[in-house]
Length: 227
Length: 236
Image: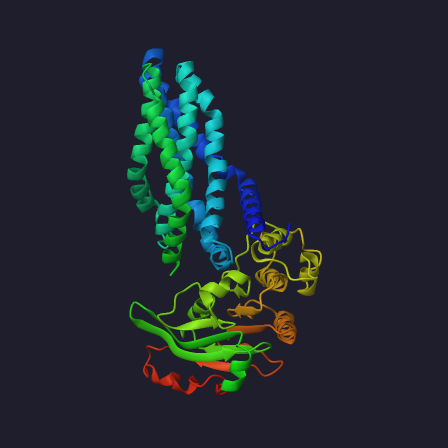
């Protein structure tokens, strides 16, 4: 492939970031462990009754997954800022929004996808009824990219600040509340044998919107933060 | 370098009444200068005189407060889209976890590849044969700088913006930077380099642009003598 084309640039960025995650794979596993531990602690706190656990299972897993996604969000652009890679990305002749979208994709692939993969196990831990699991997986598959995309915009806005962790959480959490309500709402509806398509479709609509707009917003915010 | 020359061939880089201010405090400028192919310009100034800021404005990372930057006659934001500018800043933009080869391959993917150069060749010409697969973490600061210089050789940019390229380098490294700059100038590229004066570009006679903090004392007036393009006085 010809170097310097947009395709080559995106592939080079994806390959570099995936290699970096692999080199720091110990750190990369932290969010996964966090979510598993949180979910595993609930039965100890609430008692092992299957009925109680089944009622809160979907919501618990949802909250644990979203919070663990927040853990790794602050590092999305941080290391690139500190070693000057971000300047090289901004200066490159390619659209910054596209390059940031690649970084968000790597974030989702390395933090959310492993979580979705272990979700069936977490569901078993909490006695989630089997017929709810597909709904939970579908809701997570749409909610986690939303978290990465919304998070990227907020990270880009706060990257200029030295200790942005708390501010970032305050910015992201309110934006995530609707995602949580619709995602967990779909699971609860499925559990009560009610129609659950509408909340899932809402999530899908937001995801489509965020896929297009969030990288553009993140690129704009990043350029403001760097000056 | 008079008006008729400019009309025949647009200069590679031109700054017109370029000024930058942060929170209404002027950092530098207004500056007027033009660079033609094959020219090396040395920006001299004390610490805090705005050298790094000037390079960031020239690279398009910062919007100038006033004036504009033209690259081959086109405004910078548009010209930027054609792989013409390479920046080597204080932060090298290299990943310490990756090897020199991996870092350079990423730079090529992002910035394109100059014809006839490969990463091993570029590493050899900065004196780093055999270090292709060593993680950058294990290299010294000077060796990392050399990897960043190898990146300049690989990408097809005509304009190099080098911020303190001599920092961290040994005597051989300083000569290497001068040699690379000479080579770059001979094939028609141009470069803007900053220095606080401790090291100098010795081979050739680069044009010098003295930079003084615009907010200190003689606000504005210190730059008037830079006004005619190319009529820069030599530094003290």
